[in-house]
Structures are given as C-alpha cells and as structure tokens.
Image 1 (cartoon, helix red, strand yellow):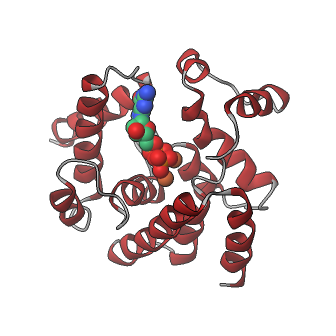
Image 2 (image 1 turned 60 degrees about the horizontal axis):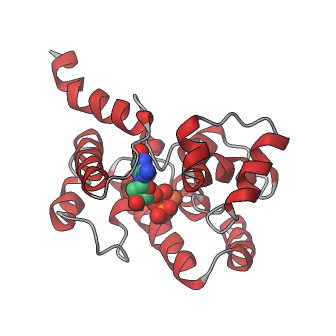
Image 3 (image 1 turned 120 degrees about the horizontal axis):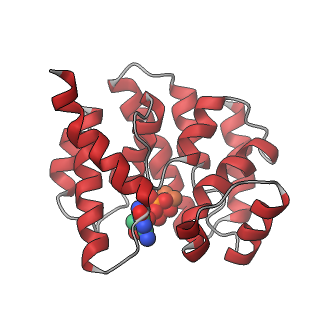
Amino acid sequence: MKELEKYQKKLQRYLDQGRYQHTLGVMYTSAALAMAYHYDLKKAMTAGLLHDCAKNVPNDKKLELCKKHHIEITDIERENPFLLHAKVGAWIAKKKYDVKDEEVLHAIKVHTTGAPAMGTLDMILFIADYIEPGRDKAHNLPQIREMAFTSLEQTVEKILYDTLHYLNEKSGRIDPTTQLTYEYYKNRKEMAV
Ligand code: DGI
Ligand code: FE
Ligand code: FE
C-alpha cells in the first residue's frame, strides 16, 4: 500500500491534526466495511483517506476553483460553500493525487449529501464518515454502528433521517440532494415489492 502512504504524507500538509485523525478513522472504517461487504480494500481505503482532502481549502478558493475548472455549482452550494468540499475534493483527488478510479472519485464527490441509487463504495464512504471511531456527537451512534454491518441501504436511510432532523433543528438549509437521497432510500423497500 505504498500509494496510501504517499497520500498520507501529502494530506498531512493540507489538513489540521484533528481532520487528519478523522481521515484515518474513515480510512480504517471504510476498510472494515469493505471486508464485511466483500469490496476492494484498497479502493475503500483510498476513498476514506482522501474524502476530506478539500476540507481546509478556504471557501472563496473553492468557489474560484469551481469557476476556473467548470465544476457546476448549485444555489445552495453557493450559499453554503462548505458543501463544495466534496465536489472540489473529488477534483483535487484526481488532479493532485492522481487518483484515476472513477468509483473512488464518485464516492468522494457524493460523500456529504449522498445521492440516490449510490454504489457500494459510495455507501461505504458515506457511512464510514458518520460512524468512524472519532465521531461522538451524532445521536444513535451505537445503533447505527451496529446496523452498518448488517445493511448498507438501511444504514444510509437512518443516517439521512437523523441528518435531516439535525439540520431542521438548527435551521440549516437543506441541499435538495440530501432530501432526495433520503426519499430514495426510504421508498426503496416499496419499490422492491
Ligand atoms: O466533512 P465532514 O465534517 O467529515 O462530514 P460531511 O462532509 O458529511 O459533512 C457533514 C456536515 O454536512 C454535517 O454537519 C451535516 C451537513 N450536511 C449534510 N447534508 C447537508 C448538510 N448541511 C446542509 N446545510 N445541507 C445539507 O443538505
Ligand atoms: Fe466531508
Ligand atoms: Fe469526513
């Protein structure tokens, strides 16, 4: 895993210590989930390691990067540029870390809001980001941590349900993609029958 070590050295220059520790937590939690769901370990660890690589890029710089490189942004992203660390992170992973795997890049791109009909790696990263050992603020973490190893879809639904409630309480603007993703995962059971 020489590449992972190389990424780690570089990341340490761009992230603060707390964020770097979170990143390692997400990397190992992604690995654990990949083991449980028979997914490629290296891909899962790469996505976990790099998912927040744009987290410390200042907001104006994120907006500038999007403009310059024709990355489309929505109104809510313009109002809440922190949401852009996912899209910009996928771009940085590709251009600055030379990640070529499209599944890894896609997982980074959708890691904050999720997206309807996510692939296995998208769900692994989305969940690992929420449950890694360093997280302690969200409600229901013990239950969600256990559920993560039983059903990826069910866990994604639960995380989105809790996230939407949390955002409603603190009156944070909700990205339509977050809402849409929740509806998709809530309704998937009815679709299946
Ligand atoms: O980057 P991290 O902090 O590790 O995690 P993240 O990229 O999943 O971002 C988590 C934050 O994003 C959390 O406080 C909830 C928030 N979030 C998720 N969906 C939305 C949202 N914030 C807003 N305003 N709107 C959303 O739809
Ligand atoms: Fe993030
Ligand atoms: Fe994160």
